[in-house]
Image (cartoon, rainbow, N blue to C red):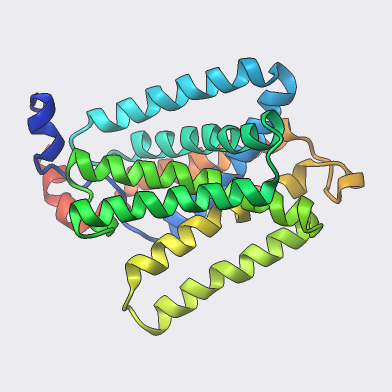
Length: 267
């Protein structure tokens, strides 16, 4: 079924199918995997190619994936998760540029991205009156959504490096810290369904440093407190897990939100 072509301005505010997946256990598992894979892939590319080469490559891949995601009129599993992976890789590079390229302390970069994310949420709330991912059904809302997603990846990268390096928790300690923090919104949501939007975004931010800390722990040398598997093998291993998990969702359609299932069946 071909997708209707709309003019730019009309398309920006015209309702369409919900463009994000249903929030399930599989969603959170893949989300953590993408954060770890993005961390490992970014570090591998920077070490192999250097920042001046890898960052532009990361940006182009990110731009292509996001453009493809925005071009669709409803949710597609593979398109969505490809965009998330590319956001993860480029978001990591964006955070690292502030520290490695501009020599900005991790505390300052973490605070900077926290302020940017707050600004995105404020603008999003004022414009759309909701931050719920169950309402991502216009291009404008999708723009706010991906702006928040990109910023959470950059914020999470900076926060993970802050705890591991500046606060000297190393990557194992950081993994336990963020695992404990992500349990807070999970338990709160289990106890009460109120404030579910806040719980979602709280957990979403934490998944980034959690996955990145896990990947770094597997990849870095014993001297740095890791298992010394290397960033290349970690990138490949986590990529395989992501592909398998996304393939399962693409086949089962368990990630399609209820309001979009009828449209999917009619295609």
